[in-house]
Length: 190
Image 1 (cartoon, rainbow, N blue to C red):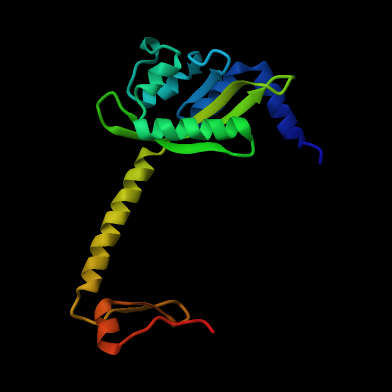
Image 2: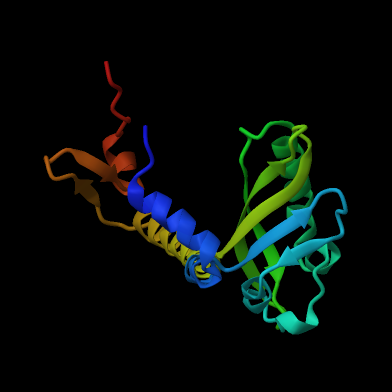
């Protein structure tokens, strides 16, 4: 299948005009990184990554140890395992959620994705990666889980019979009071 002409045009534009790449990176990511696997301490991180963590990009070194000191130890281990699996098999995605410590002390949740870059001899030489800050999403998810637990506790302990149906009139929920008083058993498909 032939590439669409606009895709070809965009790729050419990215190569000829650095502001296009910068726009794409700033508009869609919260950090970009490019890592030298031959010299593992050397890693370029975009300014957006450091800003996400509350740091001044001008003060932060482009060293792997700089971010490794800020990542949650459990997540660092998970990232190392995921990296090893991805380097072994590029079909294994390098994609995980990790927790970083913001300069002000709170947790920043980041989706970290990467892709190994190989040389002509098929040796892994570099990694290209992208970060997306998903902290607001994680906090919203945690809040919803907490509210659901509270709601389920209220429903389960209510002295009333509480039932719910779908749009077709099929029952989709019975609270514990209803189940207990009527000896409800879950429906079994036959």
